[in-house]
Length: 321
Image (tube, rainbow, N blue to C red; front, side):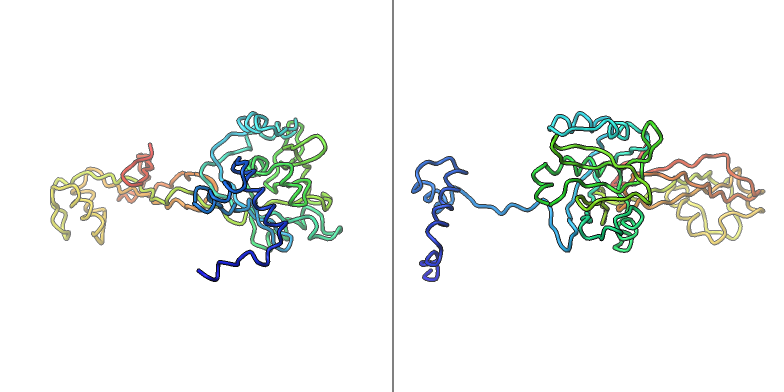
């Protein structure tokens, strides 16, 4: 305990006074002795506030999480929090090309304009630099998440007037390709747009947002097509005995070296079809997308099955309808 007795011996009196004043201010206690007592008694706890972003070598990093908000819904959501949404930005948000996701954690890297020379501040050079760093193109919704996450003062603390999200450009109602950007200026905090062109020239007062990684909160699961069998009316030659139990029938087909042959089809099977489509859902995918499965039809008469495969999601017992 002795090593803690004179902890403050080298601390300036003015700093101690400022510390007590801060405790009083944050606790609402007017008596400095009572404020100190509360801290010492553990009635007031001091916690370290995790910064919203980090910065190293001119690259700002932070994370945002999507929640399925549509472009149309973003307009009142941002305006309700005191942000202003420009007319061109509204046009982009209402575009069919604006496609929200849900439960995706985006790790964002913002390349500050100051790390580029004036000659390098061209869209194609900036995208090339990001690609060399193995950054990827963000979803347009990232711009809204950035706008909501950071206030005017926080952008100012970053040393930025704007953050342009370098998503795939979306055309406005006039056909111009635009990017969504979070701005601060004399009129307040905005969600606005920038014209996107490979040769577009930028200034050094802002930053360019790319994705470092994106992770779904959902666990990966398997997409498996249901098996469609018709029980054989008689024992096929040169094959294992068939049980009447359905699970055994499945094992029988999966373990057979010759699923279906012409002779078996002609003599034993009314229908001879084994459809299967297997997909692994990628937990690191930015979009929850199902690809139309190809029909893998193994039938003896060499024609495609007329049965359409149906996707089933095996996720702890739940099916995707």
